[in-house]
Image 1 (cartoon, helix red, strand yellow):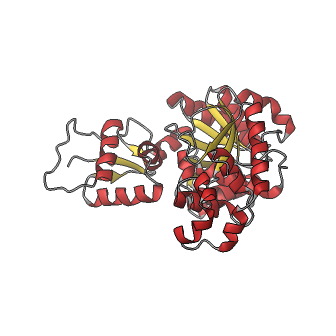
Image 2 (image 1 turned 60 degrees about the vertical axis):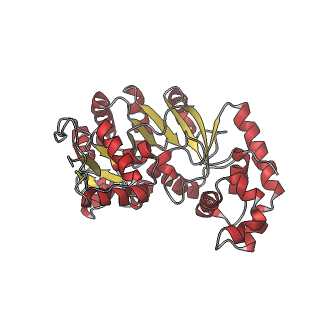
Image 3 (image 1 turned 120 degrees about the horizontal axis):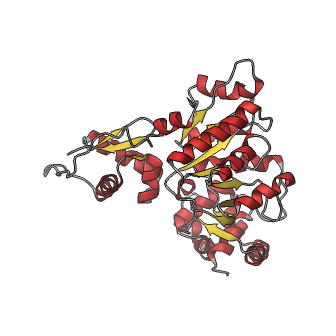
Length: 373
C-alpha cells in the first residue's frame, strides 16, 4: 500500500460513495489519508458509522494508479499538491466540513496571510460593477497591500477583480472548476499567466476534468471557505455568486453586497442579499474596512500592561487567545483561527466564554478586542 499522503489523498477522492464530507471525516478520525487505507479493514471498529460498503470502496487499486498518474503530472509541471496535513493548505478552508482533502496549485502566494477576501459577481458585468472593482481594490491596497484577493477567473466581475488586484500589486488567486491542464475560459489565459508571480491558480479537480456546470458550484465552496469575507459586486436574482454568498453565511464568514438601482437586473441579487440580511451593504473600501474592524484609528485604547485577576480561571486555550490579542491587537475571528490553529467552532465557544468572563469584547464585523482584566 502506498503511504505517500498526497497519493493516498488523491486516491481517496476517487473512491465511489465517499464524497467530500465523508473523506474529510475519515481523515479527521484516523489522522491521515494513508492511515485510512492502511487501516481500512478496522475502520468500522475505529469509527462508528463506517459501513462495510466504505471498506469495499477503499479497496481500489485503480484509484491508486490514477493518483500516481496525477502526481506524475504535478511533478512534471512543478505544481504544488496540498493535503489537509500540509501547513500551506488554506487553514480557513480546512475548518469547513466539506473542505476538499487535496488541492492543486500553480503560483506563489500565502493562503494563510492575515487578510483574505473574495470578489464575485455576474458574468454580464456593467461599467458600474467593473469600476467598483477598480476603485475598491485601489483604495483597499493603499491601506492593506498584503490582502489576498480570490475569485473564479470567469467572465465579468471575476476577471475584473483579478485584473484590478494585479494592477494594484495585490496577490490574487483564481479557483478553477477544472484541472490545471487547461484554462477556461481560454481568453483569460494571459491574465492567468500574469497571476502566477503574485497569486496563482487553485483547484480540487484532477487533470482531464471538464469545466462542467456542477463543478462551478463545487468550486464556489472553496472560494467562500478559504476567505474571511465574500463581496458580491453585481448579481442577477439567480447565479453562482449568490450560491457563494449563501455558503459564506453557512461558514460563519462575513458577506457584503454592492447595492444598485432596483431597475437594474445586474443588481437584483445584491439588493436581495441586503434586503434578506444575508449581506451588509458597502459602497467603498472604507465601508468594508470599518465593517471588518480592520481600521487602526478606531481601535479602543488598551492598557499597556494588563494585570491578570488572580481569581479569574482561564484554560490553556483561553490563555493562548489572550496572548495573541495582546501581541497583535484587535483581530477578526478568522484571523484568530489562523493564528492559533484552533477550529472555527471551537474558537466561537472560546470567545463566548471569554466574553462572559469580561476578558474580550466583540466589535462590529466579527472583530474581538481584549479588555483589561
